[in-house]
Length: 590
Image (cartoon, rainbow, N blue to C red; front, side, top):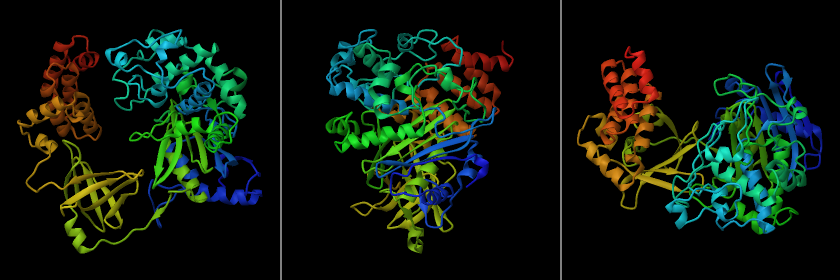
């Protein structure tokens, strides 16, 4: 145990863990067995105390499920750095997007009673607000199933929340993007069922639908439908949280280590992000879902639960839950991120599970801790890999260049006893051989296979946890990927990207190329960023944003005259573009 963590334990003795000493021993192993995405025999392991320090996480709270029971809850560290208050197992924290799973459970209860229907247009039932129609929605109306599965084509990925004491918008103001809302209007941005598009906005519409039909405010509705029946005593969708509970709530810490202004934000977008809870309550919720898929829940029928957890692929988001695969074993769950808080729920149908909540935006810590729990309990699909040695023939034959998408490329080359994997010319990841042509990048979870296709040609395959494979044939030595031609200043490459854009390939889109340029800026590869963003401006010459981005890359590379030229071009297209105005002012042009 690490006394510096301020550990508080609440032990449950209703399972095979019958005595406290056994529980303590297993938890002690978990606390010193945090591990990277891929576990190698003899590979690196960390302690929870060290990783909390490494990530700057003040407090952690965890609940572990085994055989369908909560076997232990524990809390570590501080709930509030300013006051020194210890994290407790019942300290309220923001569940963030795990709210979606809990809200979807409530919606499905209403579906079972016939109050809502999954597959009929929601505009026919909404009363206080309706989704503005488009040609796409007139052809395929948005349904509750679309809202719960993020397939309605709706915008507004997530919400920033509101500082304590700020005016709070109504739900209708949030949906229409009207002050004092601080998020854009929730509108249809692509045709329903065209693809997965994560939308907190869609869940806010579901919240409105549920309240309209029930005739109750959403926090009260969820208290009646889910929280009270399951026994989630430390949970609430109220906003703001009542003062008697707020005084015990955790204070959030941002990714840069600074505290959230006012300690925590308020989220009126309750269904998407507004649940206050503790891990033990979320574990009770996960267990109720496990009961439902076995036909043992008094709250939700088996068929309904099966629909909630049906894996649609390829995005693996069902109705309120993501479906996660680990080497053939399926799990359901959700992650959450509000400013200052992160959360993680993962469980399977067989009765395993864990809930982890932290008062910081450092989700990697939760993943490392979840893996420690999974290995201690022997969860299905979690396994340790063993390094093997490559033969000299393999070391000579495997390196090469492989296409990644329509423009990017991968370089594989020898690196000591391993291989190095470089994407788009970036610094390489080390690939550790594990046999049968398979390699892993331990720190990222990447698994690839280097082998040959049916015709004997060398290929590289990405191997995903759900069993999918994505293969790419090796490039001939003289062949150049489009991105390589960009870096070689090949002017003819513009026409090839135009063809990609015309075909609808995302690689030819302004958004993709702009993101690629800023990715290079983030790596401080400014000359390469200039080349990619110059291509973007050539492809989209009437886009002020394209010229503005190119100006930034030039400025960062020290080419101030080119930066001036590109910023002026951006302002000629959009005289009110703030970033270009500000940059030119700093360059002495008022």
